[in-house]
Amino acid sequence: MSTQASMSKVTTAIIRTMKKKGEKIAMLTAYDYPTALIVDEAGVDIILVGDSLGMVVLGYDSTLPVTMDEMIHHTKAVSRAVKRAMVIGDMPFMSYQVSEEDALYNAARFLQEAGAQGVKLEGGREVAEITRRITSAGIPVMGHLGLTPQSVHQFGGYKVQGKEDASAKKIMEDAKILEEAGVFSLVLECVPATLAKDVSESLVIPTIGIGGGVHCDGQVLVLHDMLGMFEKFIPKFVKTYAKLNVQMKESVQQYIDEVKRSVFPEKKHSF
Image (cartoon, rainbow, N blue to C red; front, side):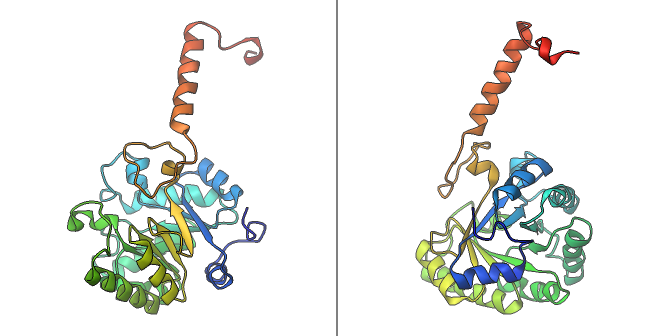
């Protein structure tokens, strides 16, 4: 367990201090009350209610169909469970791209209605002014560069970003622009480890890698991926720590078998 795990509520100040001390930041996704309870009690530093819920919970083909109301609904459930971790709400597609007013209103909903402590939004220089507007209203913002899933059609698929000099230079520049705009941390997704190391070392704010190598200041994974619950597609950067899909299926099959053979319920399960 992290040395932070026994402390009170994780804040942006604590996250920044962790980078200064060289203490790695552990971040995971959660989308409902029972799993958020487990993840928080285990000692994770940040819980992201990711728009990845569209794929791993709601059955969409991408994150694009996820709505603000769906995000608020799930973030509320997570916030009810969490005592220590910082809860970040993922701003879904088109919730911040239309106007600064929309972006500010939607970001505020995550704090006012859903109990989150901050929001995450994707993009670099093109969201700098929106980021500045949200942070100036007192709402912490986590940035997200590299492979940004909401732009998957623009990228032509889920591909590693920043492999060429020009795109690596843009990611580095965007990282500094976002830091200047006020983000308190930055997710680097599917970028070469050397680039992630350079970005991490050039910023005062912490970086959180997902497919960005070990030199980021922290790491994040989708909970369903790392627990082996969702196996439609397992990215290279995922380490599977359990095979819950196998255990769950076997348990359900055993239950079905016992019901069919009248083995369950036994006397001790009856009144």
